Image (tube, rainbow, N blue to C red; front, side):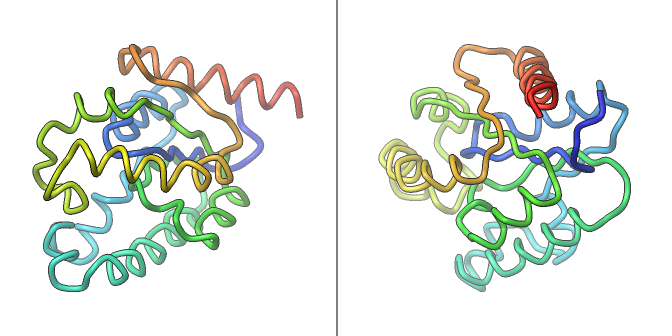
Length: 177
Protein backbone atom coordinates (compact mmCIF):
# COMPACT_ATOMS: atom_id res chain seq x y z
CA UNK A 1 0.00 0.00 0.00
CA UNK A 2 1.40 3.39 -0.98
CA UNK A 3 -0.67 6.35 0.20
CA UNK A 4 -1.33 9.21 -2.20
CA UNK A 5 0.88 11.52 -0.19
CA UNK A 6 4.59 11.03 0.45
CA UNK A 7 4.13 11.24 4.21
CA UNK A 8 1.84 9.91 6.89
CA UNK A 9 1.28 12.43 9.68
CA UNK A 10 -0.05 11.39 13.09
CA UNK A 11 -1.75 14.07 15.15
CA UNK A 12 -3.53 13.95 18.48
CA UNK A 13 -3.26 14.83 22.12
CA UNK A 14 -0.26 14.00 24.28
CA UNK A 15 -0.64 10.41 25.34
CA UNK A 16 -2.65 9.37 22.26
CA UNK A 17 0.21 7.13 21.12
CA UNK A 18 1.53 9.06 18.13
CA UNK A 19 5.16 8.09 18.63
CA UNK A 20 4.61 4.48 19.62
CA UNK A 21 2.09 3.83 16.83
CA UNK A 22 4.18 5.86 14.40
CA UNK A 23 7.19 3.60 14.90
CA UNK A 24 5.08 0.50 14.33
CA UNK A 25 3.35 1.93 11.24
CA UNK A 26 6.68 2.98 9.74
CA UNK A 27 8.12 -0.48 10.37
CA UNK A 28 5.14 -2.15 8.67
CA UNK A 29 5.36 0.18 5.67
CA UNK A 30 9.15 0.06 5.45
CA UNK A 31 9.28 3.85 5.83
CA UNK A 32 11.33 5.95 8.20
CA UNK A 33 9.77 7.41 11.35
CA UNK A 34 10.47 10.83 12.84
CA UNK A 35 9.13 12.18 16.12
CA UNK A 36 8.78 15.94 15.61
CA UNK A 37 9.30 16.76 19.29
CA UNK A 38 12.51 14.72 19.41
CA UNK A 39 13.69 16.47 16.26
CA UNK A 40 12.97 19.85 17.89
CA UNK A 41 15.09 18.84 20.88
CA UNK A 42 17.91 17.63 18.64
CA UNK A 43 17.77 20.72 16.44
CA UNK A 44 17.77 23.20 19.33
CA UNK A 45 19.92 21.24 21.76
CA UNK A 46 17.29 21.88 24.44
CA UNK A 47 14.53 19.84 26.04
CA UNK A 48 11.00 20.99 25.30
CA UNK A 49 10.37 22.12 28.90
CA UNK A 50 13.52 24.30 28.59
CA UNK A 51 12.25 25.83 25.36
CA UNK A 52 8.87 26.61 26.96
CA UNK A 53 10.60 28.14 30.00
CA UNK A 54 12.98 30.29 27.95
CA UNK A 55 10.91 31.16 24.88
CA UNK A 56 7.33 30.59 25.99
CA UNK A 57 4.75 28.66 24.03
CA UNK A 58 4.89 31.12 21.11
CA UNK A 59 8.63 30.58 20.75
CA UNK A 60 8.19 26.83 20.88
CA UNK A 61 5.44 26.95 18.25
CA UNK A 62 7.69 28.92 15.88
CA UNK A 63 10.41 26.27 16.20
CA UNK A 64 7.81 23.54 15.79
CA UNK A 65 6.51 25.16 12.58
CA UNK A 66 10.00 25.29 11.06
CA UNK A 67 10.84 21.70 12.02
CA UNK A 68 7.52 20.41 10.69
CA UNK A 69 8.04 22.20 7.37
CA UNK A 70 11.51 20.69 7.15
CA UNK A 71 10.28 17.16 7.93
CA UNK A 72 7.45 17.35 5.42
CA UNK A 73 9.75 18.79 2.77
CA UNK A 74 12.17 15.89 2.62
CA UNK A 75 11.94 13.38 -0.20
CA UNK A 76 11.06 9.82 0.61
CA UNK A 77 8.27 8.32 2.63
CA UNK A 78 8.12 9.27 6.29
CA UNK A 79 5.75 8.69 9.16
CA UNK A 80 5.80 11.89 11.21
CA UNK A 81 4.56 11.86 14.81
CA UNK A 82 3.75 15.47 15.61
CA UNK A 83 3.56 17.20 18.94
CA UNK A 84 0.06 17.53 20.34
CA UNK A 85 -0.21 21.24 19.54
CA UNK A 86 1.13 21.17 15.98
CA UNK A 87 -2.44 21.46 14.69
CA UNK A 88 -2.99 24.82 16.39
CA UNK A 89 -1.47 26.70 13.47
CA UNK A 90 -3.69 26.92 10.37
CA UNK A 91 -0.50 26.98 8.28
CA UNK A 92 0.69 23.73 9.90
CA UNK A 93 -2.68 22.08 9.26
CA UNK A 94 -2.59 23.13 5.61
CA UNK A 95 1.00 21.92 5.20
CA UNK A 96 0.28 18.57 6.82
CA UNK A 97 -2.80 18.01 4.64
CA UNK A 98 -0.97 19.06 1.48
CA UNK A 99 2.13 16.92 2.01
CA UNK A 100 0.75 14.01 3.97
CA UNK A 101 -2.18 11.85 4.86
CA UNK A 102 -3.15 13.12 8.30
CA UNK A 103 -4.45 10.65 10.87
CA UNK A 104 -5.96 11.90 14.12
CA UNK A 105 -5.36 9.45 16.96
CA UNK A 106 -8.39 10.37 19.04
CA UNK A 107 -8.65 9.40 22.70
CA UNK A 108 -10.93 10.21 25.60
CA UNK A 109 -9.41 12.36 28.36
CA UNK A 110 -9.47 9.38 30.72
CA UNK A 111 -7.28 7.39 28.35
CA UNK A 112 -4.87 10.30 27.95
CA UNK A 113 -4.63 10.85 31.69
CA UNK A 114 -3.89 7.18 32.31
CA UNK A 115 -1.03 7.41 29.82
CA UNK A 116 0.54 10.76 30.76
CA UNK A 117 0.18 10.33 34.52
CA UNK A 118 1.29 13.38 36.46
CA UNK A 119 2.42 15.12 33.28
CA UNK A 120 6.11 15.14 34.17
CA UNK A 121 8.09 16.92 31.42
CA UNK A 122 4.86 18.18 29.84
CA UNK A 123 4.82 21.95 30.36
CA UNK A 124 1.14 22.39 29.54
CA UNK A 125 0.13 19.98 32.32
CA UNK A 126 2.27 21.44 35.10
CA UNK A 127 -0.43 22.61 37.50
CA UNK A 128 -3.42 20.27 37.25
CA UNK A 129 -2.96 17.44 34.72
CA UNK A 130 -6.57 16.22 34.80
CA UNK A 131 -8.13 19.63 34.30
CA UNK A 132 -5.47 20.60 31.76
CA UNK A 133 -5.98 17.50 29.61
CA UNK A 134 -9.75 18.04 29.54
CA UNK A 135 -9.40 21.73 28.70
CA UNK A 136 -6.75 21.22 26.02
CA UNK A 137 -8.68 18.36 24.41
CA UNK A 138 -11.79 20.53 24.18
CA UNK A 139 -9.85 23.52 22.84
CA UNK A 140 -8.05 21.49 20.17
CA UNK A 141 -10.86 19.20 19.01
CA UNK A 142 -11.85 21.30 16.00
CA UNK A 143 -8.21 21.81 14.97
CA UNK A 144 -7.63 18.05 15.00
CA UNK A 145 -10.82 17.48 13.03
CA UNK A 146 -9.84 20.13 10.48
CA UNK A 147 -6.37 18.65 10.04
CA UNK A 148 -7.37 15.00 9.76
CA UNK A 149 -8.06 13.05 6.61
CA UNK A 150 -9.01 10.08 8.82
CA UNK A 151 -9.71 9.48 12.50
CA UNK A 152 -8.67 6.45 14.53
CA UNK A 153 -10.17 6.04 17.99
CA UNK A 154 -7.46 4.56 20.22
CA UNK A 155 -9.30 3.99 23.49
CA UNK A 156 -8.79 0.43 24.70
CA UNK A 157 -6.38 -0.46 21.89
CA UNK A 158 -2.84 -1.74 22.23
CA UNK A 159 -0.08 -0.01 20.28
CA UNK A 160 -0.10 -2.79 17.69
CA UNK A 161 -3.87 -2.48 17.32
CA UNK A 162 -3.55 1.27 16.85
CA UNK A 163 -0.93 0.76 14.15
CA UNK A 164 -3.15 -1.78 12.40
CA UNK A 165 -6.13 0.58 12.64
CA UNK A 166 -4.07 3.45 11.17
CA UNK A 167 -3.01 1.30 8.23
CA UNK A 168 -6.57 0.05 7.67
CA UNK A 169 -7.99 3.60 7.79
CA UNK A 170 -5.40 4.93 5.36
CA UNK A 171 -5.96 1.99 3.03
CA UNK A 172 -9.75 2.54 3.12
CA UNK A 173 -9.26 6.22 2.35
CA UNK A 174 -7.01 5.40 -0.58
CA UNK A 175 -9.57 2.95 -2.00
CA UNK A 176 -12.27 5.60 -1.72
CA UNK A 177 -10.14 8.23 -3.51
